[in-house]
Amino acid sequence: MDVREKRLASGTPEPFASETLPASADNVTQRVGNAGSARKPYVLKYWQIYTMVLPGVLYFILFKYVPLTGIVIAFQDYNVFNGITGSPFVGFKHFVNLFTYPEFLRVLKNTLLISVYQIVFGFPAPIVLALLMNEVRRMLFKRTVQTVLYLPHFLSWVIVGGLVINFLSPSSGMVNDVLRWMGKEPVFFMQEPGYFRSIVVISGIWKEVGWGTIIYLAALAGINPELYEAAEVDGAGRMRQTFSITLPSLLPTIMVLLLLRIGHILDLGFEQVYMLLNPLVTSTGEIIDTYIYRIGLLGGQYSYTTAIGLFKSLVGVILVVGANQLSKKTTGNSIY
Image 1: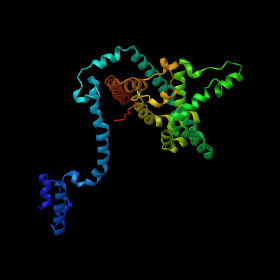
Image 2: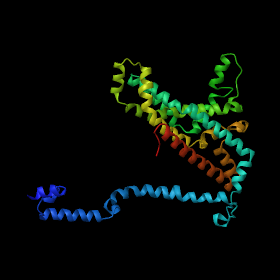
Image 3: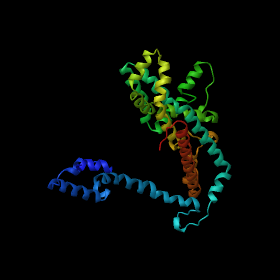
Image 4: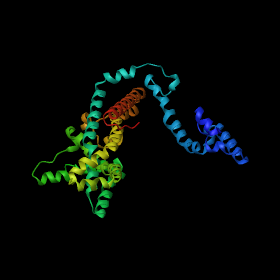
């Protein structure tokens, strides 16, 4: 019985080919080199990659995490002259005041209503526009329309706010000119509290809808065209293809962007509302960001407004985590 038969009889596995080769000088050198690199620390072995990552890590540490230590003033009666170390600690005093101030509850209501309106009407707008643009076959017309729709994104809210105010002007605005032509009285849109939220939502859609279609158009370009060809062979029309192929293919992208949007439900942005806001529409138009600016920076209540900012961040984190878990269980899509 030879060696191989003895191995098979005893159940010993066959050796690898490399193990049967003679231990030449090159093989020995290679094995020693591999053993040395395996013992080398992983960070030192791939130091080039860690060097590339280091600037980004330092940026987040210095400019994102170190400033977080300033939230401690939400638990103090902060005084500029005494500083963080010299200001007295007051616990949750400012958080209690947060929910007992009727003014803050009104601001919170305004923020939630405008944010919900933006999600309901503003979030689907880029999806619908991308679906419509995807049906256009004339490339010159398609690219021209895309360019025109992208342009408002590059304008600041200072310019867009001025355009909106001019469009809605009761004396020279285009909208009121149309109303006068129809025989109706001009409307003071910017002075009526009932119109303010609609103006904010519509102006936001007009400014960002073109830019928002970029991601959806990229997702549409990644759909396999053979799916549409197979659907046409089966007799499916364009509408049927949209609901059976296009929308299911877009669903992961839609869910990820929706989850990220939900996390900013209390973070509407300061510039847009501040540019359109005036004392006559404060009752329905003031949001948390403008309230923090008015009370915190102009009024000097730094601890109180820091408590508001911390509350806003905690709500955002809770909503993102909750919506992400719900999406993972229902659709299988999540952001982490």
